[in-house]
Image (tube, rainbow, N blue to C red):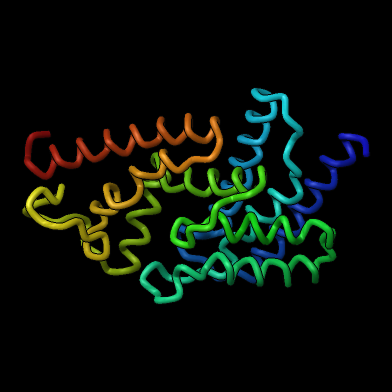
Amino acid sequence: MPKDLVLSDVAAWETTIAGWLRANVAEDPAHDVHHLMRVWRTARGLAAEEAQASGAAPADLLVVLGASLLHDVVNVPKDHPDRSRASRLSAVRAEEVLRALRFPVGLLPAVRHAIEAHSYSAGIAPRTVEARLVQDADRLESLGAIGIARCFATSGLMKRALFHGDDPLAEDRPLDDLQYALDHFEAKLLRLPATMQTAAGRRRAQERAEFLLTFRAQLLDEIAGMA
């Protein structure tokens, strides 16, 4: 199939799926349509970097697109007992949506796997290049400036404190990111670079993790009245 036709198909499906999302998905500040579109754009960029660096066969961008845009179609709250099942629930719902939209049926198993494997809490290893790209792209959304914004937005929705007033770094207490937003940096976010599946993802993750550390240092200075 000619390359320009393939890219045209991807663009058409992006418009179709994004239109469905805007009409049907309830949004919260950290998991809105803009988050889904950023994951797609990031995954597409990672795919291009990986293909150029390795010379390997390129990823199937229709699979990456479908999985990126629908990976949070079932948005289970972070503190819900079914949180670890969220990616599986999203995968099932995504297949229903894509079938209704007449998405290529032969690509649905790959889309489902990429959605199931994106989740940190599910602990499912990605078996395909498309799943690795989607997982990395979604985890990059938890790092850098956008990661900080999303972390505090989610914590605000869940009525968590910004930080422990007397021990913000948890030096003399256990980390508790169910109570304090800043604890989530150490409990999870700063661990993400080590979980990245692609070389391009690892590079970006490390850069964004450094920004988290810079932000935290500035925050601690302001808490202490030193800035």
